Image 1 (cartoon, rainbow, N blue to C red):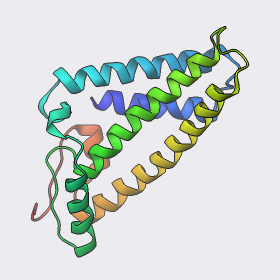
Image 2 (image 1 turned 90 degrees about the vertical axis):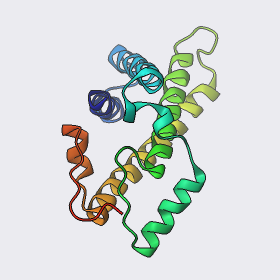
Image 3 (image 1 turned 60 degrees about the horizontal axis):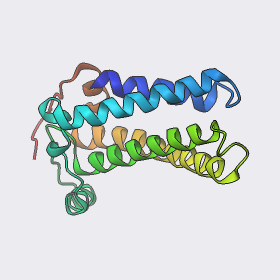
Length: 166
């Protein structure tokens, strides 16, 4: 689902920095993001091995182990998503759904002019931006630490392991 990843990245960037929230284009991009997230959820249930959610369940224990590995210099590259990467995926999927849902509420008659959907929307967008910055920093850090070009893997679909995997 690399097309999903880069489509979401481009659409989120467009809506965050290049469209006006008052224009229809902003809304349509938001609806497209919601559709893509829905498709990703379905792909996570019925897709290929490393795309399935069961291949990378949310694991606080796994995330703590990965953090310990990072702190101690132990290198363990994962064929699929790492535990921290998995948590980021779940975080971003939920955050994008909150953004889309609160954005949609602001366009309905029932919530027109009501403040809390706009506040939730803005808070979720801010959280997404912080999460995306952390995601990019983690990709750069882990790519160097593990000697696996994770950005290239998100383009080609193949991880190239240099040296020992663990």
